[in-house]
Image (tube, rainbow, N blue to C red):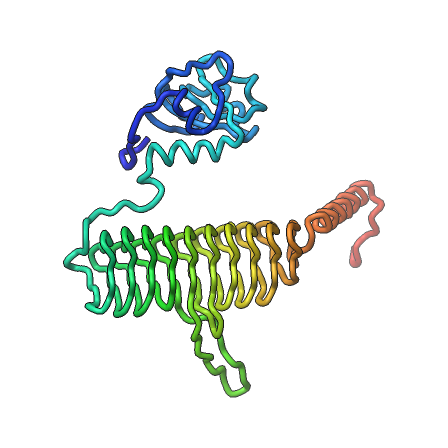
Length: 355
């Protein structure tokens, strides 16, 4: 554990089992007390850790941790020195426990109370009780900021922007033309509400199309560092409740993203694309404009989606296609490559021209 985070209490294994709805495995000591948190390979006496992936089984067998959250399938492999707590989903249980013990790690900590004298808040801006604004931040006219929200150092909140309660806007972020719900986390360097990429192309030049829409973020959305969300061209760009956006994601104008989606780093979503609820986009995936992705669909990392994806399907590749079709193509190409290699090595391959 680093000096940046401290446990608010030191619970016993029995308390942790109660918090997570888990059960202490046979031979475990329910009185063992947790004083810190660490990964399996680095854990020492007093540490809490977790295991949910067979890849780390050896680290579990060798760990010095006092308490480990595990899945049921590992219950018969618990080392003698470890008190294991069997839970349904170890990673989610770990998140629950650490969130209780170190709530400061869930969102940015305010280094200053109230509105700092070096912040620039327009007199027409409306701030509810408990708003904290750090040095160098700018809040424009008619902006509204809800109770308990933190605006980080050097962030810029534009004219008429509305931000809900218990939100965090990271340092250096800029937000314009946006309506933001409650408990939204916007990490440092986010750019939100800027022009979408809209031009009417022509032989004598490209005419800029005015972008007159907004960005709407519903409750409990999180936007990672240095991501960008363009405002709508003539509709709104909307991000649904509970959606989590990683760092370095680009979301174009008029995009509609449903509830509880996961958008992983370096994904690009082109204008007017629509994602349903619980959609997952892997890292470096690309979504073409005007494409529709159905509820609970999954797009593999580095894939490029050019066609509509039905609900619940898993697609991969460039251009993306159903995962089963993609894997068939990969295996067919692999067989061709192996066959060609074998022919060359056996001398059956015809000689190349010029030899």
